[in-house]
Length: 558
Image (cartoon, rainbow, N blue to C red; front, top):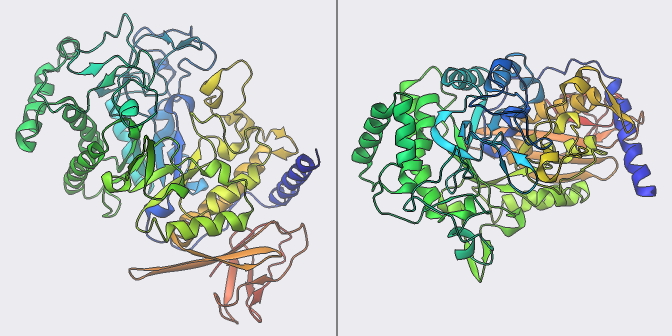
């Protein structure tokens, strides 16, 4: 009880500090170049984010008959675009939007053990070549990506290489040469993780095969009914002729995935269930994706954002930063996914590491990222769509959550609603459904009060940190060093390829104490600095600077 009281007291203190400020964030100087190592990635389930077009809420005869939070809720691509245009993401410092697969899902609902469910999440593909009508049209997808690029944000597309959607009466199984339907994985070693189905009734694509296979008849019939069979087959023929690859299942999928790059210009892939295929597949996909990305950039010079290479991050379930480059598959077998096509891996360890004190967390991460993982990165998160053990499940520490996620070395993944304390514990929902409620726009608009804080104050705190982070690559990609214990103060510095950046940050300052902040060895005496949290300026005197803001957080840069 005492520990809970301390946590709640901190939330109240920080909320009071935030609410004393104006809503307008201090203006930053021109942002530094974009680095994936410092990216702030906003991850959302399109169907659960914002509904801009109620006319597409139920396509393909789908119904409102699912178990709680397991049916379609109306969110669409046009909804994301609208929020980009409104400045929502920019005000949060987001520079990458990651959305779950927009591909056409199985049409029917199915019982996966928790009641009737639909593929609203995007991981139950029926046709990898088409935008799901519940989310919109090809024009909606193109406008979304173009709008993101026009507002300085990249798009990370979720891709699935190892499975299709469940089999239903409306969604028949593909041929045996394409998929296996048994055995179910037991995850004891590589074989029992790769050559099997993730769960019952989730057909596993035979990615190990190099044998030529014909287009599944069910897909051919679908394309003929839609009047696009000849076009799709012609494009497949051209792909296989130009690449000289066999017509094996894995290469069909690579063609279909890379088409999303050629057609729309997505800037990177997030690979779903990455350890459930042969690891070399990802290196092959990265090569084909990179070629497609370069083609798109040459064809669209006015739409591209910089000259960065195509990027890939992977979901290797249970990978943690502490694993370094070698992931244990069980049975004495390890895989280096970084050397098999990935620039980054999702860091499943962050949710538990976030329980450490600030310095222990920050120093450990910086040491590992600039040591064993130099040249690579991780994507940290506190909550996600399928992790039942997030940091701060009950949303009692939303300010601390922001501090630890957005100020830790590495890239940061904001899961939609982290910044608004969206509930992850919804009554009536079972399993991962409770993590996937609709975005709490009403709570934000009404500045709802919860557990001693207000939602708008939480959002404002995340915004201040996020906007500062976006302008300073040193935060995620730089070297870390503690400067003082009271208040806790640290510096981050980045020097590479002619780019120089340095910041000093102080956290959890007692309310209205206004201490002098140590900046010696980072900023010289006489230099005028700004606190980008309060907007105040001050001059360095004897290695210290004092802003007199009365706030709990100080973000210092010239």
